[in-house]
Length: 190
Figure 1 (cartoon, helix red, strand yellow):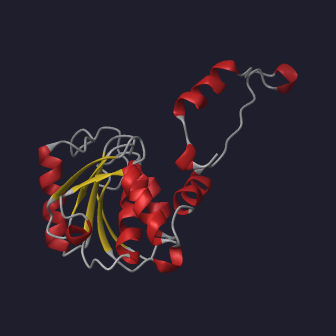
Figure 2 (spheres, rainbow, N blue to C red; figure 1 turned 180 degrees about the vertical axis):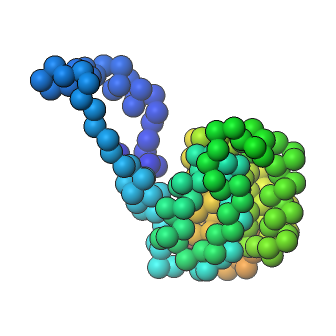
Figure 3 (cartoon, rainbow, N blue to C red; figure 1 turned 120 degrees about the vertical axis):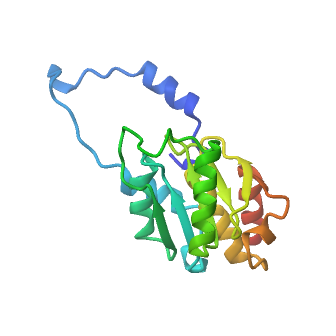
């Protein structure tokens, strides 16, 4: 299943219609699987890694589930990832992971400015939503659907392929829509 074609309602329907009785009738038998590598490959399948430039990115995972994904992605991307609140901690010592939280936004913006980063990202609990920051720490509002982990990669892929030098130049109205980012990347890839 391609992450760009993922329809969660279809997945839910498949689960509801499935018989999960394990073969042999042994209900204690379980399967352990590491899906991280597959997930990372799916995320990266929508961009050309060879064309990415070595940007500096502040990644605020707010002690939530985005942390392990960022750790796996950073091994495959040419970015200098400055990780903020990256250790998973279900007590959320730095606040509830919510990309709309003003305090978390200001903290992330300050980190972008302090690190002189090219971009910043703040995720929510399940990294479905995110808030982006330009190189000045200014918020870039947008709609991710449920693909918050994909958005920042698309923005940096677009920046690498376009004639724009900064995120604020790429997104001058300080907003984004996932579908428009994907369409722009397709146009630049022709």
